[in-house]
Amino acid sequence: MPPTQERLRGLLHPLNLAGLFTWAAVAFTLHYGPSDQLAARWGLALMFLFAFFGEDWVPRRSPAHRLLVVVQAASALGLIWLSPRVGVAPVLVVMLVASLATCWPTRWVVAIALLLNLVMFLILRSKGNDYAWMMVLIYIGFEMFAGVTVHASRSAEEARDRLARVNADLLATRSLLADASRDAERMRVARELHDVLGHKLTAMRINLRSLASEDGAPDRLKLCEQLSGELLDDVRAVVSTLRDADGLDIATSLQALAAPFPATRLDLRIAPRVHITDAALAETVLRIVQEALTNTARHSAAGALHVDIAMEGANLRLVLEDDGPLRGELREGNGLTGMRERIEKRGGQVAFGRSARGAVRIDAVLPA
Image: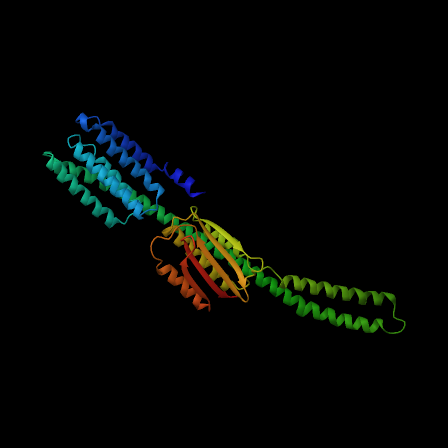
């Protein structure tokens, strides 16, 4: 699904629908208060709403996302400043905390929530609200409930995604092993045909040819010698066909790996000359693409990962590039370091860089 359609579907997420209903309840109370500040109150409320839904259109925890968080915090606190007596505007702070809990680390969510509540307390006290501390404590309770609920849901989704990735890894590995097993059995049958049946047919043909060359040999003996020759040619053709297999079905295994990443499409291009028969080499290719998929899903706003696999002489070359912009400098974390170590262990080389359109590019060469 294209990223735009995915974002539009995200607007119908239950958290967004609950947020819209909550915002509508706050908007219903905006007419309470000085009439000369009504336009300002509506402006702040709409600013909060646009920033809240705008989070679905920017990468999470990116500079743009942090800016939207600041806009929501400022709008909510500004509305509390303009409506200190109503006591409903702090609900927007609860919405913000719940939204942060979906993607930010817990320690950051707690720190931001404490800062917002401190500012809210100071605003209410400065406006002469004698029960400011009680109101803040009540809303802290709401924030804790919302934050813990969202965090538990987020943990469950992450556990489900991890399980899906492990299951896809097992399916891909099983497919590769099954293909390798079939290939090994095919080679064993080819050797048996060549070593056993081929040799005996050759010996039989030599004897038949010797008998057929004698004077007075019947025509049927000559026919048998001819048929034995044709049968030997057929056996050799079958052996050649078995030996000239297309190699392991790496494409099916790679597509299985990409299944748990619905937001990232795998654009796989394998050159016709690529025939991988070594199971260890195929496993290395699988792990390289798997790590690239994981990095693309975690650190990029990409909608697709492009993978090109081709032969360069006696080497296998992999070029991986997503279509999302790289934010900041490319640093080798544990995933990329593990990829480099895996490739160099097989005597290959890898280069990490930035493509012409600013995306992450991985260029790996492996001995085939």
